[in-house]
Image (cartoon, rainbow, N blue to C red; front, side, top):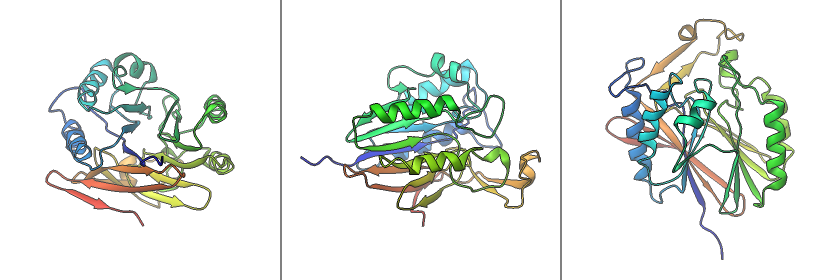
Length: 271
């Protein structure tokens, strides 16, 4: 019997603050997250799970993670979390996970294995897939019982900005490895607060917009990443979004981004 496609919603770069009503760059990140969750719950069909791919809070502390847990726990589907450069993995495990909120290296269902990678570098904005994470990925690939694989991490595998802080430092060898693995069909990430796609016969690569705000990246930014961030980046706080992925039993990946404003949901398929 043919399985229905596995529908996943990806949210990322929430930057949740500690208290209700707090704002970040003029945005109530708790309210913007609730708008996105409302849109996700209204999808038909609804997702079987949500992936929250890092920068879950603005400041990694107990209060922020407890607040996020109260919001995500109200969703009646599992939420799989992974860290971004604003997060702390130990605090996530202590104060965020439990119940329907899960932090683990792999989950398998409906003919797919989803592998989660920690691409964070302590006290840095840029990403790097460490040897430890690479070994964990290889081990999970060997043990996966499903024939198709989706990889999720925080830092992007697509070049959208020349600033070093926006990059996955070892992107090229990492992508070369992924493309050598026939089971791996797609990779998803966040960090850049924008939507992008790079699709070829070997791998589909996606980045997903933030639930907080969209950021525009200057292509003339200092590639060392040492410039003042807001000199080379501008924020559009009027819109945020999330990604939907429909994963078919035969390994096919269909995906689109939905942009969310305070008054409407705008479907947008990246070209």
